[in-house]
Image 1 (cartoon, rainbow, N blue to C red):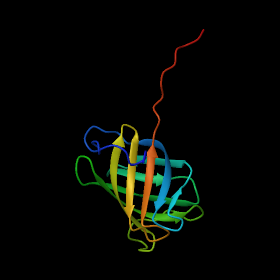
Image 2: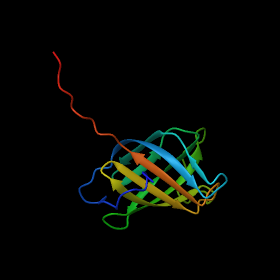
Image 3: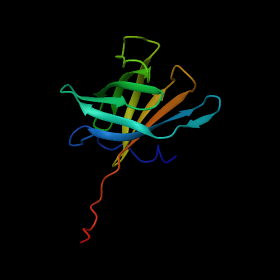
Length: 140
């Protein structure tokens, strides 16, 4: 519930998603009915043509590109690969292609909704969270 909470917030103009994120996958509608994985490392970068995503750790990884649908919604076209394989591009292998709708649901939380993924579930949710650093008082 917490991962999906909130209304979509602007992602396009004025929002900087670049940087390191922690991420986890939630699989719903399979056997078992719900699986929530632990936290891994993800990164959003800008390669000059727009934002890209890399899931950097874990045995199952993903890399791909974001495309603007509206001010509050993006599309993600990526491809899955295993940790011991090279990253793939969307379209190179239909068995590995991934498509998601992307929304920012809180100041530092982005979700990717993968409807009808090829394996294991009926809906996958990739949750990205980034923590802001708070300045602490200096102790002398």
